Image (cartoon, rainbow, N blue to C red; front, side, top):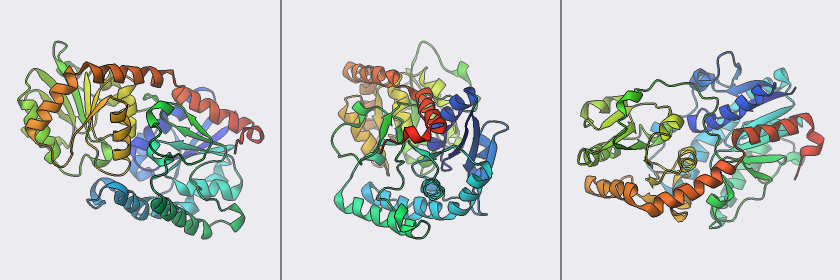
Length: 393
């Protein structure tokens, strides 16, 4: 069996798909290790996991609270400058040390862990990219794409010999595993050339259990999940307060809201506030989702045929929101300017519009037919056991 090293950023939305794939590989008998920021996400890894800490005495940037209030491509630029590129630079030495100690047959690198990709190239090891958001595979604009290429080139110059420089060092030449399906990506934007495999959502395998008061949910009432994800939910509380005001006027519904725990004090009786939830299990028990268009939440919701209201904030979220709206399975909500009456109207439409539900069920069939974490694991195992045959580009 193979030795496989995973590296992912300290962001739950990126860790969860990797956990599912690693779980599938371990069930096949492969030996797994993790190179991560242990202080931030080590507790979310399986008990007894072999961990190489990338921490250098300072935590990686907290995107949820420190990122300026910017939107669109400007927010992506800020993400690169303030998070992805500094993270890559700081992780190079500990990542290389981890690889030299563990000696993996293959490295599995989240597409935002550029340092892991550079180490794999330097040491000549086969590696696979995990893409947790389809916005990352798209060409957004010539000016922005050129700027990104310049940043990548500068980082490569500081670490790699010129012979190993490439335009997109974040994408593996062996395989790029995308946790979505081709039909959802659409054709609005051109794609970056890479050996993609669309594996669909990871579906929650490998995550730690989370306690939840399941008896609070009433079978005779319709239910929704309201979440802005782990990155953006602490940004401010206005959005949640607006949603509470709207839901107070819809007592026939129940809503589970993923939000700061202190908001429980002002929640109406039909709203349960939790700062963390077992999302995949909860999605099996709701009728619709209000979210920030985070990629994992969108794909996990659609895989269950759930229509959505999407309220994108920044980074890749506007792109993902547009994909699911264009697919006819979601309504748009303005995150920063929504009012209680508008929110109430949208929630009522979400649960009443049969077209939204029909399109969500259509996409569900596509997502459920995808190979998921098990298929991703098989592709990785093939590369680990026969790397000379697996390179496709």
